[in-house]
Length: 166
Image 1 (tube, rainbow, N blue to C red):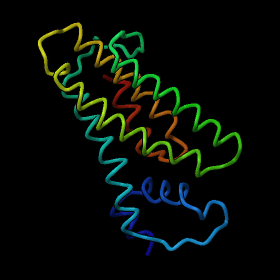
Image 2: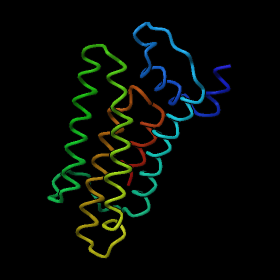
Image 3: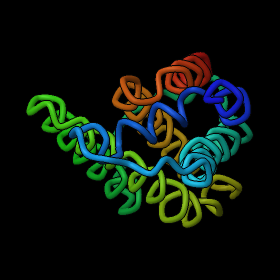
């Protein structure tokens, strides 16, 4: 029963799985509950951990922007701009699989590359550097919430509201 799976892993995971699969092009698919679970863990699970890290260290004064000169901040901002372009191109050409697949790679870059290498900045005593990292992270999370909304609308709204209100 698909609703049992939706109740366990969420509608966003199932929706993302189907939108990024070959079934969107009218091809056959062997549905895999294991792959849906994997996508839920890799996408929403990782992204939620990034959000929790952001919420742990942020303050109300942090405004989201992309004007940091730190090389990591600049890199993740460039990656977010590339993500917007890839997803936009996918939707413009009605290739929904190409519009959804880049989200997984971006979440991977955000979590594994950017956040892991920015932990010391977030936890450190240099307040200016910490605020620049948090500001960049807020900016990137807002962009991500907007571009992932067609593919994962429920978590996208949750993410946007959590980042917007901080």
